[in-house]
Length: 451
Image (tube, rainbow, N blue to C red; front, side, top):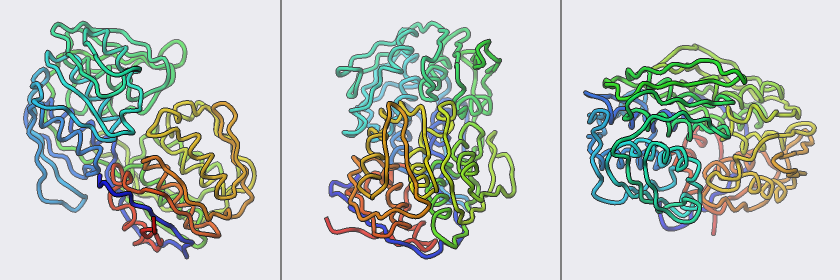
């Protein structure tokens, strides 16, 4: 990430028209690199997200012995080749693993390292060093791993992998795909069966990809309505061809922009439609959004489709807390849609937003209020009062290096009466490289702003 801040400004747009493919799914990209690095043989990944978060994972896997190489781009995006070391074959990195802003990459890699007899030191940027790691430290310690970090388990952190790891049964206390995945990845190099109990199912990319690479993992209903996952340790994973779907979390930004800007029609190609990731699409449809799925298909174990989006008049709804795991990263852009909808939108159960790249709950409330939107926070509920028309805008929003906050307010600027600026857009490339150019191709006006 460049040292100089990158202030950006978005101005009211005419109709957004066109077809595009947003970058590859970040969650799938991280996991493809990790499991490809633990597989026997060669894995070819098409459409890998080449954002800074995923590249940090690629560098870390290289540092631990995998061979990761970028080949010539293909029609569906970047093509990467990974020659794996086999389960149990990770080497001790010679230097600190700098994960930048990649919270998912850091937590999942800790799971991999936790059951290898090696020591690794993790660090990251200022944002990542503020984020709590205790949620993965606690279950990974049960395997026999040791941790030495700052107060609260924050980075920089030294992880000593278990030399004789023991399988665990772990009940996830709060819905978290990262915690679940870290435990399952630790179970890969652990003899016996590692069991994870999820009271509320979360995104299942790890389970799908483990099965795709050849691991044995069973999924059975739990008595409380959740799910029990049982992974057989020390499998031989086999290199595979992975087509990474377009990231639904990234697709959310041009999708909501198309819904809000009058006269728009946009097609988003090859978007991942994993049912545990589509909470935003379901919610927008409840609000009256015209979103159609074209050419549904399956790629590398993941459901995929093309989304045709037409500008729509939206109305406020209540989003129940049980939907949060399927759309936790999309609440910032949903809040923008709610600001333009008719009536009140209540988003409940958002405690997880307080420990993302920033306190997203507070950041969205501050930014929306500065743009003339009536907004309130009651506990872990965000309440947005929409008037059925775009808000005034005109604010300069501080985003605290949070890419989703930044992109959300730039989308608001495309429809608000006055332009909306953000103080620093550098972090956007961590998850959505080329965001400004892709939005510009649809007709959006997003430019560098005077500091």
